[in-house]
Image (tube, rainbow, N blue to C red):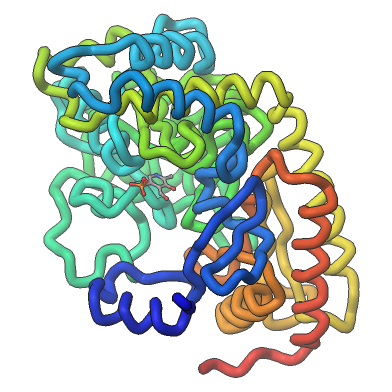
Length: 434
Ligand SMILES: Cc1ncc(COP(=O)(O)O)c(C=O)c1O
């Protein structure tokens, strides 16, 4: 029988260690919010393939859409022989993206590729090189997106030099000493001291930082970014690779902003488990690159587009925007009740936008001192008890919950019970570093 241990040995011998894995279990099959490993053990999945499965593993509507597409054709290369699912999906996203400005949409394959293309389009539109991003932000592992990413370990170490023209601002994190005013001041200081705004093509920001720790971008900061972008002709890019597709209670998290981004990058839950990504943007900006400047062999795969059309149907029919808010509230209330207990490992800040929920592990109740070791220990313990749980954050002390929005209350509660039991077993004392 294939077991986790032997697969782990084969993985270590056959694949580079740079592709780190969060668990030592190997997937056999999965359904909605549950996964079974090759040894037959069942897990509740609070990771959702890192925010890819808002509509759950193998959603029947998505699977049917893919099945139908598989029967017709799987690849033509859109740039050689285009097809309707690409055009139809673009039409839908143009209509659903926030703001009244007419939109156009480009499809690619991965989140990083979407970000790369948004930057290319902004440069073509403005004729300028510069890009401003935020510390703690994560935009991918390709050269440009690695440069934009605001975390050295493990994403940048040893991979320099970074591409030119990238500047970072601090992202607001009040519990770790960065206020929204600090971020706004840093933006003005950058434009006064270091960089003329007329050299900047784009400012890119995640509405809620994903890998960075689920910190929510304050509306006050977004409004100031929009104002500065308008003043200087800079494109505002919302990187919604992790926040998009109903996770925050809106199709796009930037709908919470009340101001319109110039471009939105989307991927992950867009196609419910199939590789597809896109850039939705103001038509005039999207049309800046000349024919042939955008695209790729697999970009906008017909299977991915069919899956995404299925995902949109599921979000509408199963009212997943409302469900995201209900799930988010349920999780936040429960985690806050656990936080109030004095006999469990201490929890710090609990936060969320819709069902994009996180809490911080701290060394002592009532403080915000990060406890990365306890965070690691909680994920390991949860896995033993049958829950796949992910951490994130600049301080590696944030637990993020990305349970499918199609999960039942019973399965969500089962996962939360496991978290509570683990924290109780860990007790109040600090966890020793390995
Ligand atoms: C906000 C954000 N942007 C970009 C990416 C990169 O996406 P991909 O891993 O599909 O290249 C990610 C991945 O986690 C992300 O969270």
